[in-house]
Length: 149
Image (cartoon, rainbow, N blue to C red; front, top):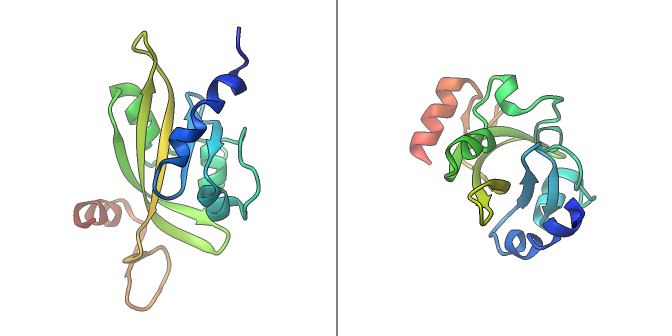
């Protein structure tokens, strides 16, 4: 029997092939592998493996779905198809709007075993007052932003 870590090391090339910050996440929201761009964006280049995605990106103690936001990982887990959502994430330099896309990874038995999550910074919007940018974080604002991005 393989340890969980050894099985997920195989995902590193897949995560590294993603353009931009990306991670491989297990079904319990734990980060398994990450790109340097992700570590730079969220942890000042430090390792994030083993931490929960909501702790790293939102600095919360509960998953997005339990905090009133749509969770693309939950949606991908339930539907077994790619899911997309816009979130306000906490980065070392401040809160930013990001598009999060989650791809479920399915094994030979059809079971979703992990997810690849890709982040894309939305430069037209800001979570706080900023010249020349759309500003907001309410649910209607996020929905409008999803429609225009």
